[in-house]
Image 1: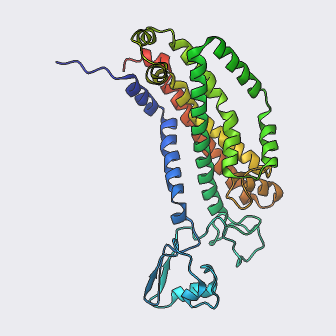
Image 2: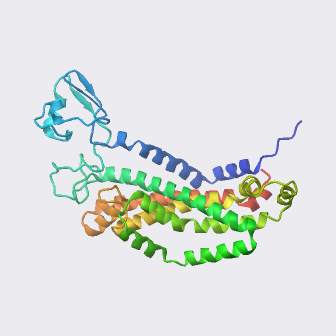
Image 3: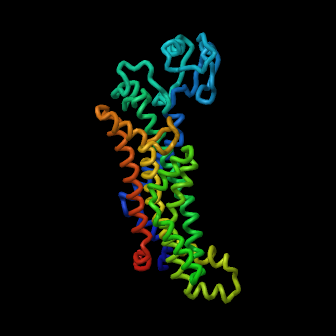
Length: 348
């Protein structure tokens, strides 16, 4: 009877991650929500996905059609919420297939029975904001924008932190001392104040905010990578690689780096949560994304300014807290699964 093959550390880490039910299901739920948000235009849009009018087929979701196409009087983009246009599609032989939520994040409900912000109705399931825009659509698109922003910031921060920490830890000596003093000076800067100053000096934009937040987000990763490189540079396998005449670049990226990525992977969800929090804070202060962008921070500011419109604060707070909670649970599960002490001592 043959003995079972021993499992690799990566396999044992994955099995341990799966046993952490809150973190495991949080990962699946977060990925599902993000994948759905990538198709936001098909799930929440004020344009029909497909329409048939007088025997002709149209795809308004991918076309900008004038009102005259559907029997209107003006050569302007069609407002598909206009009662006249709706009546045209209700005639025999005509129809329009709308997304499940027939509102875009910029759609203003001009036909609401109550002044904005109005409460939940059949047309706006979560109500509208202070400009009459559908709150559900703004939350849906805002979630996608926040997660995409956090992914870009995390990727840039990880690359900068890994490179900086690898150079520090591998060369050590005076190189490490000089680079560490530079890190200490940069880390002593008041991060939030610096973000506010630069956001006020330059025109707000997505990539400007990515640059500003990434400029401070790599410091923690660099410290962990530096510690791993300082520990691994004196081990036998690194000495053997040097004795064989391998280049420094090959030793760094081929031999040491794969063994130093554990803390980086563990920090990724927490870095994403921090990026979402930073973007929300700047948007709340009015120093983030351009006006009109679907922003969770801007919705929180609206909730603060309209305390009687409870649906704005409650729904936005639920989306923000839920997103951050999912990321924290994923991070905790990754930290436990990649704990080197458990990887060595786990015989499963």
